[in-house]
Length: 522
Image (cartoon, rainbow, N blue to C red):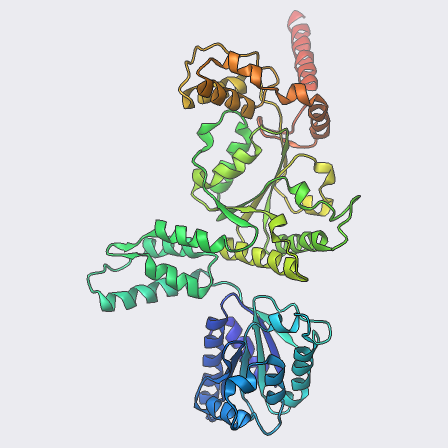
């Protein structure tokens, strides 16, 4: 018996009349709960429990013989759909004392769509009217939905449970059962090996039970499971979650020069004792939470709610991460995007702006759905990488959740620029001895862009550079501002330890040389 079923049985045993269940798969939840309730009745030598379900298309329908009898009794001579198709009218029928026997259960599908819509007051009242009546004789109304979002008028009258996405054990069972059923029809299918099942589990994380089952069935091949096909189907399904997209980079760490310290840290982390199972990438995070705190305000409260949800989920699930601060084009996004290819983990791009909806309560539902999907994919091992250009506008309480540090990506040094040139010249098939521009202060992205342009224009990089304005010339003030902010405060993406201003580091090196000379002269 799964956790939700156990909780439901306990709640019914103390005559809880109204139970809300937040679930990604209402059909599976209904099946699990009804099975658990019926088994409880059988173990107690009680008669079968009358079971019914309601949805807007079918109205009230009996799920077993006793349930069918109840529906027929309630509707009389009327067609059941005509009598119960309206949710408020159906709730009125269900509130009849002599119409619904004791210990009956009713599953009310997509309940939030009806009590939160305009004119939903009648549905709210119908739910409230049932409370005291059903508590007397162990009857139960189950409200099913992806997010309960209960109105204040009945929030204290409904006990809410949340059914999470399937864990690894449940996914392993799904894969095994689907494969065994397929082998009965086609004995030529080979027995699955443990490593095949494990790869299948990893590719299904984040899916509800039903799509996981369907994805497995469509990915069976004579030799076992087509994991690549499972990942592709999973990608399509997860991208139905507002604000989430899968990133698949064609590049790896070796495809970019510089930022060696951040690459080394990521390598040790993802090869360490507890490697993250999913990388969540939030680009320009300060813009995502604009208005959540500080100066500008979001009068709708959506940004504040998003911030609160992220703070809670990161704390509750023990999620952590790192913040990458630096000039545009210095490799921040490159590091976040290439982790997937480098360490064979999924990378989810998180766009909080895409979760904002026009309907009341829609934004709140969608940010929570996003977090549930991330948890389903990664469990407690999600690793967040956020890029940021203006750290000052990022709420301090959010910064503290990124416990693996704030990393500064400075303009590349002469040595780093040389390695970037070699990679880009080779990538665009340019003459390695071609004439180059003076590149002092250039970013890695600017070197890449000038090589791309040189290839397109069939000229050398020096000539192509006349169409490039590097940031060191267009916005030197922002470079100085970020460098002063990072000095001795943030970790360096290039060398071990804290970031030190180039001028300060040069002065320190000069001082060490002078002391060395004085010592040697004595």
